[in-house]
Length: 587
Image (cartoon, rainbow, N blue to C red; front, side, top):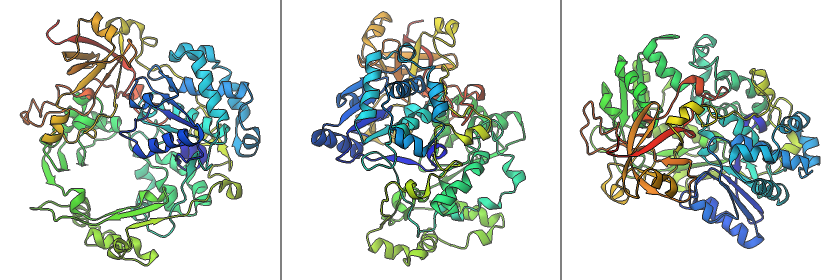
């Protein structure tokens, strides 16, 4: 969404001069160590204030000067309320807004709908805390705003991100040293998007992208509206492509597999993925994968998804192949790593797999590089290096940061300004300003359903030593964290007859799973949190068990119906839906 407003991605970089750190739904020091070192140093050196917005009292809250314990799924309302207060009190940067922002008057009219008292009722956050957060962020400058997946995992996600970036814009915390910055792309290296051959897709084929008509921002329709502006400012069409990815809509794909509408999808390849655990609505995913004529998996281990495959291609790990990270040219740095060990047996890297398939399909001209290292030599040729020479020089190329580049060239948008009122969203037929919508499955939107499922469930919080669904089969890691854990407030646990360490059922309208209870006073009594990514490699891999994928996998409970997905991007709600909890063995 930052591309849509600013014409480039913004990165929160804490500097010693940073005076306010606004962390919105993100991780603590164990997860974002560099960011937190900077935040704590800024507080020590310059008295910076740290604000944390999160439904749970996680590690980051221990370091916060102010904690806003938000109701899941109401982030958009909070951001709009903060904007309302900043404008009402005259705390925004009027000169910057007048010169570099488009649509301020329309924004001002919109946020009149979000006075602090109303936002407090929506979000469950006391009024004085909302005012304090807005006051600090607007007046203690420069400030950074870092958001985690909490903003992106709700049905109101695009609107939340839109409002979040507006906060940075009207307070002139954009491309400021100590604020949210643009990185200058490194101009020499040939980036992935320059050789991806997107231009070979016909308009007819592009228009077959599943979800393109409904979720238009994340499709080629959205990309085409921004491409010329990105190219004008950043100079390279590849950077324009890479800064605005276009996707088919996942839930729509799985439904097309099962229904044949709008056209049949009969084959799928997944690399280093585990959709039976990492994709919402596991039962639907299972049925879809089982119905394919061809399902191919390339992975390191036998996962629940691999158990359903017709062909399994053993893949090399990152240590068994060379790497050239160019981050699609958007972060101002290119980095490399050599192959450290030879891959054993007949395993292949991803490039070999795709190249081999391409050659069999008659694409010889598109795959002239026989090895991954040969491809990297080609990509580094404009800077006069081979891959090995690049490694000998340290394996890092970085561009020099130029702050406030917009003063010379404007922003890469249709208006040349930060689009508080988005011309892109307007052209795609959407509301050009953020608006709060009640989560599709909440005590307020579904009061009758809430009588049976009275608790709000959030998931997706990170938990070491795992990364999503990875590492459950590594014995040392499993010893550190053997069981799936859910968190529940002491009052709620007591009312349900549940004690710390009990196994409980978590049930939504779509199914139920078991996790182990952790009584935790850092969560609202009306909210519970459950871990994601769980399966059990030690259990039988054959159907129906599939390594215990049905036991504790949170995506058995999630909903990916396109009707509840974000109407702009198609994102599905992984947090903020209804559930009930009861002790295992209790009817």
